[in-house]
Length: 77
Image (tube, rainbow, N blue to C red):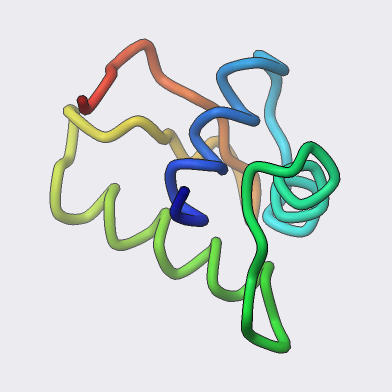
């Protein structure tokens, strides 16, 4: 599973806003994602921002504050 898909699962399951460090740590702890880079939270942050920019209202993510994201009710299967 990609880090982006893992982030979407974590946010949807927890149904709360989280910062990227919390998202990355939860995805790794739950076994959804095994990052190969040195900065997993930066990887998650850039991927979430890219999806928000490219998909707009169809994004699985919503930025709710500085560095804070939550899940939308949109699924991108």
